[in-house]
Length: 318
Image 1 (cartoon, helix red, strand yellow):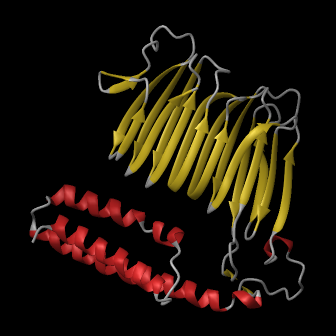
Image 2 (spheres, rainbow, N blue to C red; image 1 turned 180 degrees about the vertical axis):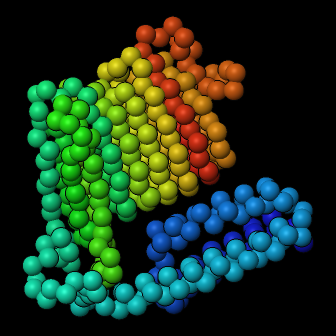
Image 3 (cartoon, one colour; image 1 turned 90 degrees about the vertical axis):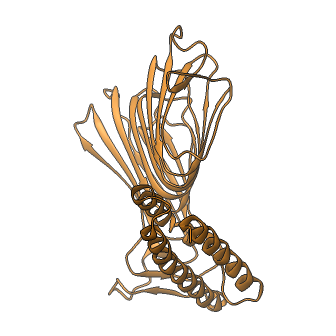
């Protein structure tokens, strides 16, 4: 029996079972939780590529991975059904805090708001921004007179902003973190983070987040290097023409990424990975990569290097 047929059949059976359970109220489907299993797909593709699709070992591996994935999905879905039963009671269980006082502002069930600012030093010309986060909606839009400004509307977790390095060449580290062993039972939990940076600084930016949605308008910023590492996300990035050369590195798992770049800038795209879908409107394929017709003669250039698993990549002009 072909391993591809087993995997496809098992996948369809699993999806059908989940929708059937949802219709009859057996459990709730949390697609975010299910999407966290995407590494199993990469493991499967890697092992099958290594040993061959027609190998008997591939069939065994397929069955084993399905036996792992199906129980995990069912258990997590049933757990969500239990959570729903407590929604009307607004329950918050904290197993990691011995303090019985109700003064934990970061973990109030009804949600909290945070605003953090790293003030601007006029001597700063270059800076590095490191961003890491979990499940949330991340937005960068507009600019700030401060070095970095962060506003958060949180249903769970908290944000942190700290500075390392020297005063004239700082490293700004932003993070969204949860609290270990906290159980938040409720409906429509959602985190939304808004960030603004100073447009007069030349930035090296590193973004790393496992799941969620990101909408980054970076068109007003001077960026030397941009690195994006994602898991299961939907990411939109708008780049500008504030520097002569911008290097962009993207590493992703199961995701959809769209870049918008100015017509005035030449762009080259290098792709390495199992890309499912690509849309490079206005680009020509040349020597194993894609580039705009005016790339070599352009005074300003953007180089995008993409390395990922199964995803959709779009690069559009504006």
